[in-house]
Every structure is written in C-alpha cells, then in structure tokens.
Amino acid sequence: MTIDWSHFTPAMSLAGGALIGFAAAMLLLLSGRVAGISGIVGGLLAPHRGDVAWRLAFVAGLLAAPAAMLMLGEGRAPRIDAGYGTLVIAGLLVGAGTSYGSGCTSGHGVCGLSRLSPRSLAATVAFMAAGMLTVFVVRHLA
Amino acid sequence: MNALYCFAAGLVFGAGLILSGMTDPGKVIGFLDVAGNWDPSLAFVMAGAILVGFFAFRAAGRRGRTFLGGALHLPTRRDIDLRLLGGAAVFGIGWGLAGFCPGPALVSFASGVDQAAVFVAAMLGGMLVYRAAERLR
Image 1 (spheres, rainbow over the protein chains, first blue to last red):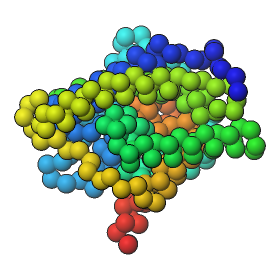
Image 2: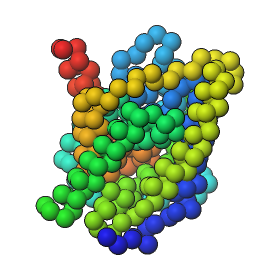
Image 3: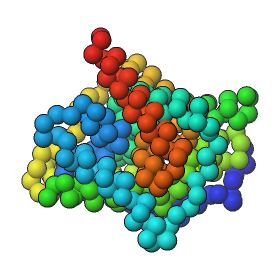
C-alpha cells in the first residue's frame, strides 16, 4: 500500500464532512428526520400521505447544491472509470442493496455511527468490506 | 416552513459532498483501493461528519423533541440480521464497481454528469425491484 498524496485532501474532506454532519444536524434538530439519502429517496417511490413534502424538499436541496457551489467557484471534473454497462449493474445493486440493508453511506455510515447504533456499525463494516473487496478484484485480479 | 428547513439541509448536505470530494468516484474508489495507491480522504469525511453528528444526536436524544417541539423519527431496530448484512454487502459491491453511493450520485446527476444520470436511473430501478419483490413475499 502506498498513499496517493496527489489526490489526498485531508483539510477539504474534513471540512466537507463537517458540513455533511451539520446538514444532518439541521434535518434532525429542526425536522426530526434522519439524513439517510437512500431511505429519503426510497420513501418517495412508495409515498404515504403527509410524508412526501419534506423528502422532496431535501432532495431538491441536494439537487440544487452543484449550481450553488458553482457560483462559489467550486466545480471539479469527476474521474469516472466505469462504463455504462457497469454503471447500470452498480446502480441496480446500490438501489436493491440499500433497500434490503435499510441504508447507505449517509444513513448508516454518518447518522448511524453518530448515534452509536450497533446495527449501523455492522452495516458500515459490511459495505466498506464489500466495496474494498470489489475494488481489489476489479483493479488487481481482473 | 418545515419544507424550507429540509431544503436547506439538503443544500448544505450536497455542498458538503462536493467540498469533501465525495462526488468524484475516482476519490471514492481511491479510498476503497487499500491494496493500491490509497487516498485516505473518505475517512476524514466520515470523521468530520460523525464528530458533528454525534453531538447533534446526543442533543436530540436528551431533548426528546426537535428544537421546534416536533417529534423525532429515529430508527428503533437493534437486531443485526442477514437482510441488513446481505443488503449492505450488495450495496458495497455496487459502490465499489462505480464509486457512486446514493447522495453523491444524485448531486452528480444534478451537475449534468451523464454517467450519474444512468446510475441514478438504475438505482431507482433497484429500489423498485425491492418493492416488487417485497409485495410477492
């Protein structure tokens, strides 16, 4: 293992992470909701009365973020290696997996670990390990 | 009024994802590639988010209500079963393949990244497959 110093951004990532935590705090302390993106989006696919507006508002804010950040001069080009076939398979796995596993990086990884949930810790270890194993197979074995 | 708070929270959440670098799949895969040229940034994102989040959840737990007096909607399950671990593992495989998880994928989709649009469409498809399978059970 070597450290990729050219891409490592400890300060920006820590600051961005704190902002994510602050956003989760806002949603929790003002609206009483957990900022789990897969759960918020999944709830829109099977809408219940009175449980739609807050979800739509949160997702709209998420979607407005790139334009707002662009105005602040922040707009780096992403590095995407996956082809369209891989993206479709990956998307299906992420959609189904987060539904069965009741959460994703935000719901389990950020909010779940913040509230010291053993369930979320188990899920986070599972998806991190599976992600690392997948990247190892794709990058170093295939 | 509640919708406005939720919109603001989503906006700040998305800004944090962009600032932290998590909307770049190359950075996410760089973190997951522990055997290669490792980029530890994602661990710093998690640390920053959990540090702030910990105090927020502690404050919410002590109050038992929101700052505005509303109810807290917190998960109550504590069991660790195969659905949780299997689902998380399947999610992790998809995450490792593309470098996208749900939040960053939605933000990148809004940035006009074609690959993110395809990923988001497939992700919604995966969620619908789950709902259809649950109805058949």
